[in-house]
Length: 357
Image (cartoon, rainbow, N blue to C red; front, side, top):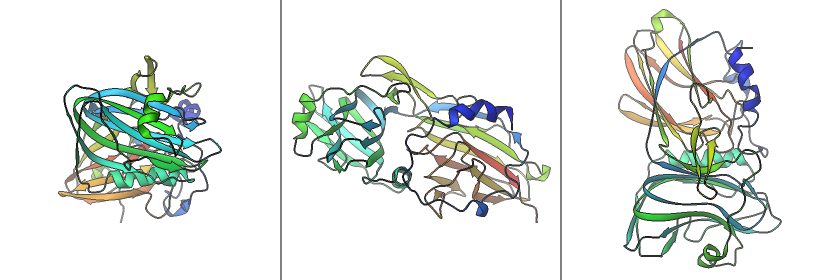
C-alpha cells in the first residue's frame, strides 16, 4: 500500500455525505485494469481558485425537526449546494428562499441548476443533480422588491417523506444584498410564516458540513504535456486535502470557521495537453469509494456530457475501479469538468495511459 493511501485511510471513511440506500452498482470487472491500479508517476498540476461564493448546506444532514439548516446574506455571483434528509416521522417540505434585504429592487438571475426528486437512493439523487447541472440550461430572471421573497426550487418547496433526501446545486447572481435560507417546515405552513418563526438548527456534532466559502471553482492545469511515446502512466489526485486542500470558510449562523470536507459544490475544470502519436486513454478513478456523478468532456471544440459511470448508478466499491472517460490520438488538448456529487466519496484520480495495440 502506498504511503499516501495509508494517510488517507481514515479520511476516506468519513468523506461520504450520506449512507447509500440500495443503489444499482456497476460490474467491477468491466472497468478495472486487470491487475488493479498499476504503478504510475504522480503528475504535477497547477490549481487556481476562482469563481463564485459557495453556500454549503449539509448540517444537520439528517434533519430531525423543522427549522433553518443554513442562512446567509450574499451579493454577486453565488453557488448553492444543499443536501438534507427528512429524519422525522412525518411528511415535511424542504425549501430554498431568496429574500431581498436591500431597500432597492433586486435582480436575481439563476443559471445552471440541478435539483433532485425526493429519493431513498442517495447516490442516485446526487447523480441526478450533476446530470441536470451539466446539461444545457436556460437562464431565469426575477425581480424582488424590498423584503419580498422567492422560493427557487419549485415556487413552494419540495415535499419529502421520512427518510428521503433532497439535494441540489444551483448558480445565481444578485445585484442587491439577498438573504438565502435553506429550511425544512411542515407542509401546511406558509413559507413566509416559517421564515419569520423558524430558528437556526444546530449543526451536526463533530464535522460541520455547512458554511460560506469564497471561490467555488478550481482551475486545474497539467503542468507538463502527457507524452504517450514515453509509455508511462501518470496520475492526478484531486480533493484529497493534501495536494488539493479542502475549502475553508465561515459558518454564517455561528461565526465559526468551517471546512468543506470533500469540496462539495466546488466545480473542477481540468485542462490537459497530449503530445505524441499513440492513442491515450484518460481514466477516472473514485479512490475514496462509491461514486455516482456526471461531468463534461470538452474536446475538439465540442462539449459532451459524460456519466460517472454510464452503465449503472455508481461504482468504486474497492477504490481501484476505473472507467475510460475519453481517448485521444496524436497532438491534442482538452478539458474535463466535474463536481463532487452529494453522497459520493472523495478523493478521485485521473490517469493517462498509452494504448498498446
